[in-house]
Image: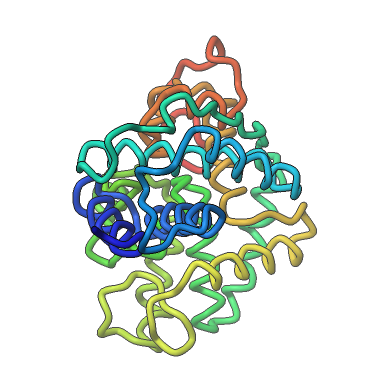
Length: 299
């Protein structure tokens, strides 16, 4: 009989290789199932087959009473349903107790988006600071321009290599959720900032690494550093504070307000579902008409 720990190890492998889940998703789901195992006090003498729907409801109810957000409860419910579906397929359990587990509806929170003039102020601030010639200032300008021009996720940005940038076509290739690759169009201002970074900034830090963006020590930049960059620029520009995800939402919102069609924005953002794009942007679909090149303020 496999222990609870051994079952979770098998499930983690299945998520990585069978579903192509990101490492972030794997860690989150495994942590959720481990929390369930702790709640149920599963050990070597008990199995996942002993778990009932009542157990699952009690677990989620305890967390709701503890004040966890609806989005966290929704994710944990999704983790439980995915795990038990796999467990039944693999013969770990005979039944799936999560089949009738109700879904907690996550709160439909919309990230803050900058107005067009606020976005321009942030990017102008980044460009003026880059005039210092300091490599990291040039890098920060390129990061801000690229996030706004493409709407890519911060995790996608940190994974971009130099070879992923096509200056001739003005595109950037990124690896999104589920290891899905997509090519995103990019405007002239962002390409100008990237060129400045590659020719006048990055060469002073670590020209050997394939990573497009690096930190002060020459290693590939991480998400925490990118968040700090955007927070600092927002403060300097005197615009509402926002995270990199806020620039992603800003880019999408400005595309839609400019007339881009919903499916084009879906492709740019890398959403698997059109409904996700519609909720994310919070813009009525009947206003969406033109293509990216005609819509984006800095295309």
